[in-house]
Image (cartoon, rainbow over all chains, first blue to last red; front, top):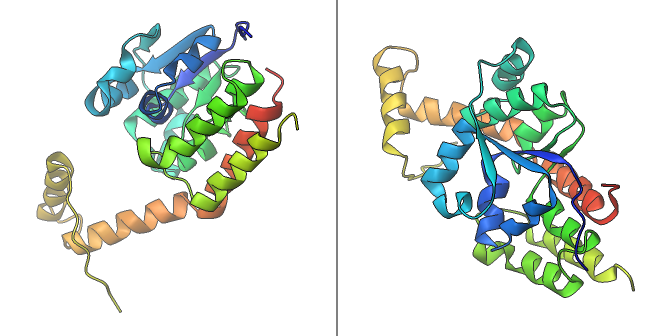
Length: 169
Length: 65
């Protein structure tokens, strides 16, 4: 089944771009209308996983100085520059979906938007959106510990896999 | 009680830490790294990370987008 464009705009932190590329499934982001990448995040990905920036129509965005709310959140949660720029962008586009795998960045982002998700959510979503079969999604989830730099407690990952296995049964 | 840990730091990060110590803003690298780790652990509690994973999977499986 071909997924329809969900027309969502996405603001990406480095983690999901890197982890999706490690899994070979960056194409999952094609389901979104635009993928904005703040300049500092772009540079971070360029340094650690440059292949993640090739092949998708990612939009590199120069971000102006943070607004006071973002500046305070960044200090409170000791966020990196990339996360700070992503939150600044999110404050300009509060309806956008923010993708990050960092716990502190997720917590800080929730002060601006409730629409904050990460790599695991995107991979599982691929099943609902018809981008991958159930077996393919399970294969990707199982590959996370060996193929990616995304860290998750093994028993929790097994629980997630069981949830996906149970879908439609 | 303390534990010794050997770690490799990126050059730039280590230099920034040394500069801070040299300028008198931190007593030594041990204190600086302990404080950095303490702050990281405070802002990344395991229970919260797990709660976010669960929310993420629910969105992935049942979200309305």
